[in-house]
Image (tube, rainbow, N blue to C red; front, top):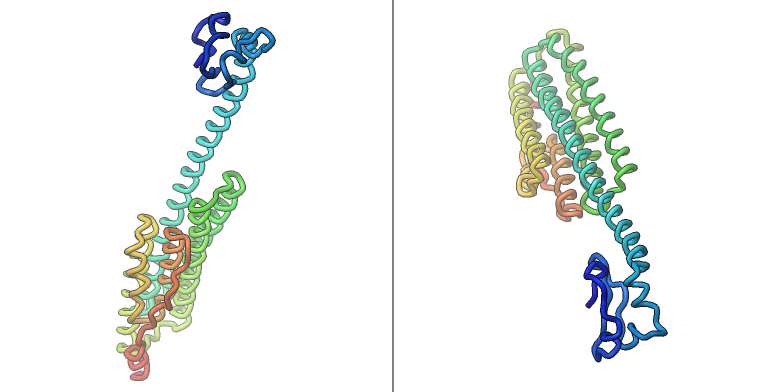
Length: 271
């Protein structure tokens, strides 16, 4: 084997070699043939190789490959940065949604119109984050052209932000109802049911958001299977299904567990 940077070759001696010869440049194969043919007077390959003519062509090819690899590495790093920012914004949005649920339930139980107005106002912040994440996700897809698991990460984030925006709207609507009640409290037994339901939803929402940030499939499935007490938690289970899709690349095939809402219906009947 001869390398372009290994010094001059003894061409006359090489013409009598019985084995094959290979010319390389920077680890790239340039020529490969029987040595007696490669170094024959009528064959210019050896001469061209020693003069560096092949090296010029090879170095251009290698430089092109190195540029391509550097570009791919840059794109990968840029995508990771974009994804980290989307994850951060989504976590912030989730925190606002959790607070909005807690405050809306608290406002209903206490008949607090001022707190209810804060809940309604908070929805603007959730909507703003929703639009920011959506814009960031679309730009990331356009610029980085992610595929496979990377694309699932972006699609999953868009699905989850849509669910969180829906949660915000529900909490806002609760706040509006509290304001419309003008201090008139519903029956206490019904309020206890609402408090219990709200606590369940908050627990599930926190767990499923943690599963998203940590890409924790086990925790996501625990939320998905934990919808046994109240179907009102279906938004949290939607997010759990999205996390499963992001990690596994396929939807959950089983039917979502349905809870027994009899006890909540009974609470409502005792008005």
